[in-house]
Amino acid sequence: MEFEERLAALATKVRNQASAIGTEEATKNAFIMPFISTILGYDVFDPLEVVPEFTADVGVKRGEKIDYAIMRDGEVQILIECKASLGSLKIEHASQLFRYFATTNARIAVLTNGVVWQFYMDLDAPNKMDAKPFLVLDLLDIDDTLVPEIRKLSKDSFDLNSIINAAEELKYVGALKREIGAQFREPSDEWIRFFTTRVYDGAFTAKVREQFTSLVGKASQQFLNERVNDRLKTALGAGAGIRYVDPETPAIASEGVVEDDLNRDTEIETTLEELEGYQILKAIACAEVKPQRITQRDAKSYFAVLLDDNNRKPIARLHFNSQKQKYLGLLDPDKVETRHPISSLDEIYEYAGQIREAVIRYR
Image (cartoon, rainbow, N blue to C red; front, side, top):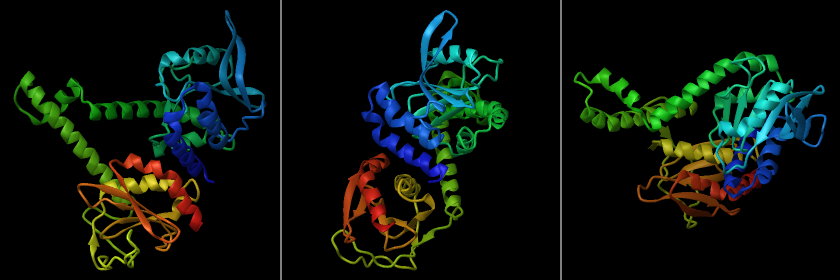
């Protein structure tokens, strides 16, 4: 599997299992060791590469242990401190990382709960771990721009100089993106004032602030939705205003009846929600095959996800046209479809096993 495929497969596993992992040891076994081995490429059972419960005397502290130390040429390169997956990460959790960072040759420290991975360096002061990470990887919401930087940390591509050179920009760009995201989710008074004074000529009174709080939030959300929609359309080779033409032939419906409402000349409009569902199905399916083999075709009555762009290899169907109820359609080996009602896109992950089984049938 390619690096991106391995990362996507682990992300799917984390999404499916995170709520069931309650202890730090379970988190290590389920998420952290697989990340070290399958993503970073280090042998977790070779003490020359990965040392669990790494111990060193730090000042007056004797016998302190850190969860993992990744070694290269006999030197510590990466320190990893772990927490349980259900807990949030706080800088207070990194006290041992701070102490070890100053007494080893490590230039990279990691604080993780198996879901979120925070990577630290010593950008602010030599040999002193920064208080803020230069890179944050969330396996439940992977930022594709960070994937090449994660690859640089892997055994086969380890490039410390390149990581160091990019770290400062990554640190501040990442921090700015997180701050902008926070403002879009819950705008602060400063954010509201900033935009209000650019479109409203009157005094910024309490009443005006109250009025524009909802307006700024609504405008921000609409702006994000429009940008996401434009990018998804571009990724699928369609510009704004272009509709998708259904290329399908009639298919077997859930009742076993041939659908006659598919017309090859009918123009189909693909929705943002369908594209988001497709991305979830693709993330699940690429645990079994390369992601480029997972394709989509929109039809008048459903949105189809296929293997190898082959109408005879349907993986799933999204029935999202109804405003009242949405369905995930899964087909058995005889191509008979069962429609499962879903209320949110996240519920698609509940059928990950059946989706992968469909892919395995055709590969």
